[in-house]
Length: 249
Image (tube, rainbow, N blue to C red; front, side, top):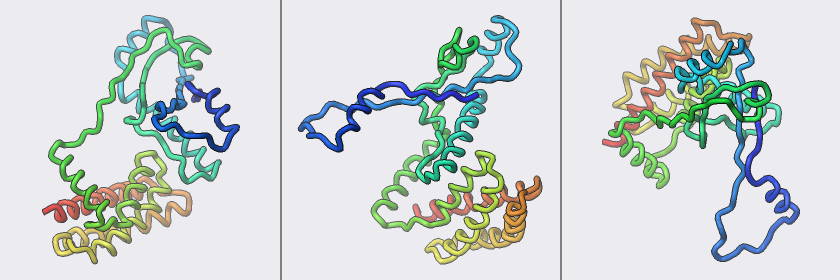
């Protein structure tokens, strides 16, 4: 069960919206903002007693939080479709201001309270330190226009999100477009010579990915097709990393 509640400055924002604008002060105070609390309640088999609940809490950690985050993101994706809002998006682990795991009784947990809980410290992105300067250099190159942003890069990111969120049909359809775009764009890129073997590999994967996309249109894809999609996506990502490395030399 998912329970969403708003905390903070609701009343102040209601008053502010009565006027379209107001005079801005030369040195304004930081604006208070609302925060949303998402509570995911496991409504399956209840814990028999406090001793079992305490034992569960000691074992619980990031994997349990990931399960809850997946529930929240499925709801946000459904909202995106229902509201026809292209700007609506899911939530990453790093975006949570606070993350807690706990247990309680009845309406207590639905209201974001608990009998006992633990606060989890965000482990942060697992990125090698050697890659951070390269990523920063790439960002600067993109912002200044020294390096072009490829359409296949964005398509690949969308495909990865769909795949990781379990939207297999969307992932299959997205990957075939990302692959075609990658072959076309990387083939004309300044790094094409360095990527020759990778481009040949991507071309060989096209038939399997296209079959998976057709299966997705019919309601699939099946397990074998899903594996082909996941593998092809990984190879596209690898080719894009190789391009970034070649550009940084």
